[in-house]
Length: 417
Image (cartoon, rainbow, N blue to C red; front, side, top):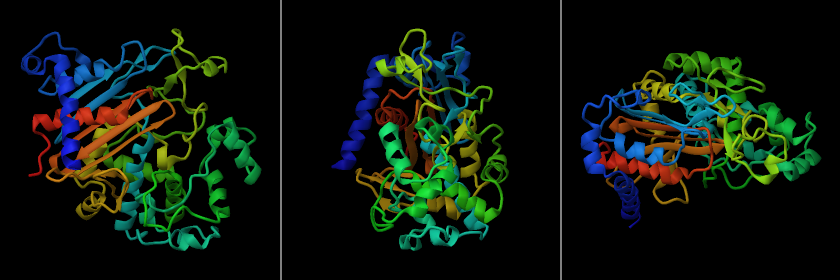
């Protein structure tokens, strides 16, 4: 029943899009040579161009924060179209080289890094956290292992403060070098969070028995890698993950950093934000909601990576061709370890997995971080991948992901065999 409901929902999304654009006729026309086809698509038009253009063109206005959507089949980019602006203060348009915060898609890099260390004999997924963090007093750290980090099944609670009330409670109960919530948003790195783990006296559940999608365990990935390798996390990731994958501009954000083509994230303005002194767009609709205005940017392994659609696809080329980790590790990434409360959704090593009977395994992430939104999805066995990176957070990621999936499934590119 659930399988049929999922497929039905996908097909409903597809037919909504198809109805909007007169799919059958437009596809035929779109796949013919068209001298007026806009150059910023980056690739020749094909069968999926019309429905995806209609879907995203209706979501993102040219003069507002927008998104880049890229689809790759095999090693070939088959759809690559940007909509809207990366920055409202300079009217900079989005391209496939615009840099966005990746939100939870950052965890894909973290998972690959840990699996590479396993292959190199530096760590084991069965190693307890106590082995690497002896200063953590709780006996339960003996029972939490690295695999639990990757599968969101550690039971570690998220104690990071969000908002003024939570900050006041946090600062009353934890030593901190920071004085205000804004300080925390700008400088709340792994070192600050380590204090909460040192004093932690209880966890949410027995490790490995449940799934809880929050990020505190992933915060430990960066200091763990530093302790194992003796190198700075950013430097190790650059030398061992990003450079071998051919990534030249992917990085982890640090306070005050401004790079060419780095987008801002935006949220819809409210009466409160309009009176707060934050940046407000000329039309009064949008306010910046990212570095300094929102939480969760400075812990790196969970949500701190920044990259472009172009480089995300390059990473997937390298990953699934075996340049970063071996075939056994890739197979383990798409193996379901922990069942979630969403039908047919499990969690593998560093990625959510969609497991529908008669369908190939899909791995994916989708999340907001401040004003940034990100979706990345792959059917590894089909060689089919896509990414959506956005400079605004006011759209429904589940609906959009279902609509994209429906287009690709209807095209016949997602097959079990």
